[in-house]
Image: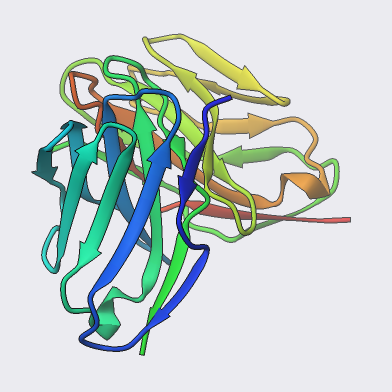
Length: 112
Length: 113
């Protein structure tokens, strides 16, 4: 079974803090994604990566950056957390040319 | 650009009722279509998919048919159970090397005993 794990299920941070969200997949997938999920807005793509050290902006990259130093790990970084970044963050991975994305359980981040 | 529109929820049904959740899409070319389900407190998991026109995806009693003429991929189940209570997302991808998914806003289904 493919497994995508995220470092925390719940996280509370203060405004201005630097926040790291970690995602690890164990199936050697090339592509990895970070989404945020908000009520009434569905899932919105923040960043994705199609190879080690390769990244592309998604639909809402402002305020975020990412890092992919190893194939299995994709990190989302909030350089200076703000209250409007309070959300559920979901990581996913996929084989290139496959249709199905595999999701982690999500990290619910609260910025106070 | 590509987009997915699905019916707003919440949808509240009694156990054993018939379920339909509507989904329509706008896309260039020939997208693949998906339904994902998110149970409370969990991430999304693939429920079913269809990769070409007239394909029917099915899983766990759920079905959806890829209708190119109406650009639709409606989710149906003949008899829902309390355990089907979840948020359902319709999505599409045009494939390619990156396989980005475009999601609808999600529909909350609540099934009452």
